Amino acid sequence: MTFIAEYRRKPHLQRSEDAARQRARKCLPIIIDVEIDAVRLLRNKFTIAESDSERATVAFLYRLARRHSSPVLLENQAIFGAARCYASERTASDNHMLCTSHSLDAVFRKHVSSDGHLYVVFVVDDVFG
Image: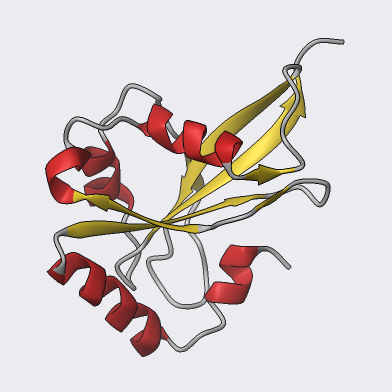
């Protein structure tokens, strides 16, 4: 079970309160995960200060995913990110590929889920060979 699936098993109210606490601290609550069994992240929940979110781009999330992956991703492994919005409690909308040059603030506003979190899913793939 992925971290996002496990986290979303918590009651909606609890997840919403977690996000509201982070928003009260002027932070964007972001949860990232990797959908491959061979790789996991050492840390999945992140907060980005709102003041930094306009300057920070999606490329920053890619760096976080690489930095916190276990085992460490090899040079021939690429990661592709997609935002997954949970508009309702039961279903996720389609995944939306993320452009690395978009600001985190814009991505958060566009793809925030009903519980107040931005869920980003990464897929790892071999690119050379």
